[in-house]
Image 1 (cartoon, rainbow, N blue to C red):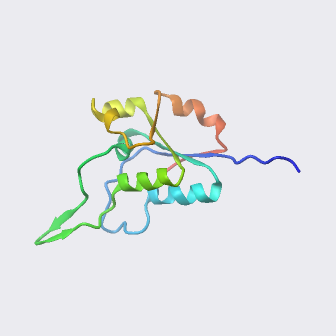
Image 2: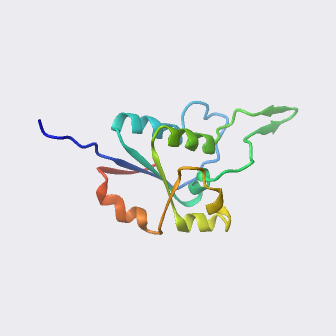
Image 3: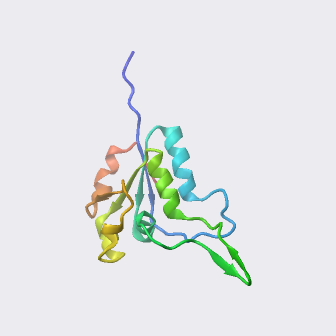
Length: 133
């Protein structure tokens, strides 16, 4: 029987979406873990402002409406931690970190990998599919 290899997919997210109350159960980041489970191998590249999802922060997503605090807003950093825990490789290009400030590289979530500028495009041919979400 011939040996089969698992084709990896690369999913790229470039636009940061700060979330909304309506999000509740589905957003583009929530899709990544399921794609990984079904495909057997998905890598996630966070580019542009979406690279900020890979940084630690003290910010807690909450919204004050009148006298009520809504604290069930999406937290992209928590979702990226879940994605990493599921075995997805998370990549960020170095120039995108630089744009986020000089301390950004020091605040990367554990497990996030930094690639050189243009390094993602150079790897595209090694993937079965490249998706931009």
